[in-house]
Picture 1: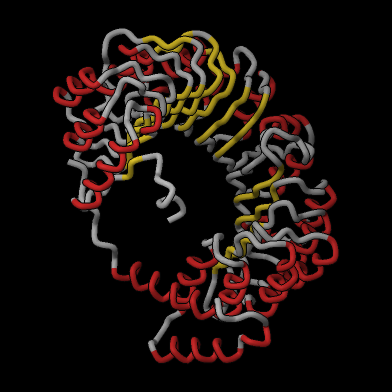
Picture 2 (picture 1 turned 90 degrees about the vertical axis):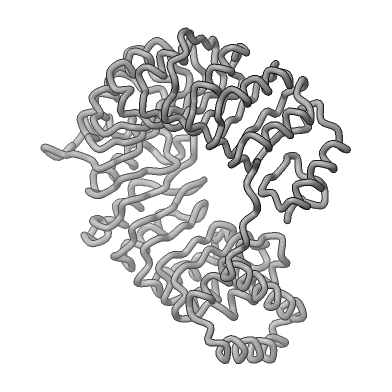
Length: 488
């Protein structure tokens, strides 16, 4: 039987209650001139109750993340709670009319922040002076997220005023060049030592030139991740062949590259011994087998690749791989061969398999997550994946499920699915309420079941089952949600 809903932690219930009270109070404020009395009353109440900085931080995060709330309520919450000991702030989405007010508030009250995320407050043109003031004030800032905002002048200003930054998000459509990157890093050895994560550029677009990204790699000795950038291999190839310091080794742990050729993969292997995750889009023939020389690799993501080359690679290093995320395969993908070579595999995600096969039913002894969309899976292959994965927690199959209630009943009664937490079959026209009830009865950890609009499952069936779930306090979500449940 699916598990029972646990009792909500007292801390969570109390925080929710206090947040609702605060929202109700601030909803009465109609203008900045009206805030003095409510602020004084609320502050006095919190002080008398012994509210700590952790409570202010949790309240602030909870309300700012609730984007359905009126922006004035979220703004006044920030104005009330952004106190000296609050260290982390993520503004969330605000309308344009609030940008200046939010920035002025952070500049005035946020001097002690160590983490600032301005995603949702798009600073441009005349408002950049406020961003400069914020950067100048936040001398202890270790994480700064300003997507779609940065330009060369912003980078220069960061370099002049910050020495402890570890994460910098300057992704999105921006006007960044080598001039800004060089200005940020020149004369600031502490910053170059501390920066380990830089999110830059846009997925699939070389809006930042790869030669400029190569400068980042060369100048940041402890850089581990260039998030959002899809041409890291191209940048490494440029660095490898142009002004590469003798004996240089990057500490990058994640690399994303598109249309990787043999020269590029050789540069990646030579310069990046610490790579744990690699994402290659449309690699040239012969590239995948070269990955075997990356000794720390345990996660592989591929798009538009040759199946036979992946199998050859996994024959050699499959024992190290815990995650495979694959799309656009060319050729025949053999699940049995994956089970043989990848005995430590935890997660398998696949989008668009050209041909899927299996042979003898060798188990996936550690596999917990299977997600396959457009997999061309035969019924026997699906049964093999389900029954041959004893640790399975999450199962998502986007193809039409040709199993009927009797097929599911035979599997569920013969095999144990003790770990199964989530089942998503969006297109299962032969399955009915009988399978829903049997899944709930035989899977003791099942908490999510969907998408039942693709089953032979009527609205009356859904209403009855939801009533049973509610009356028995069962911890299970049936999807799709009803109109009155969405957004709760």
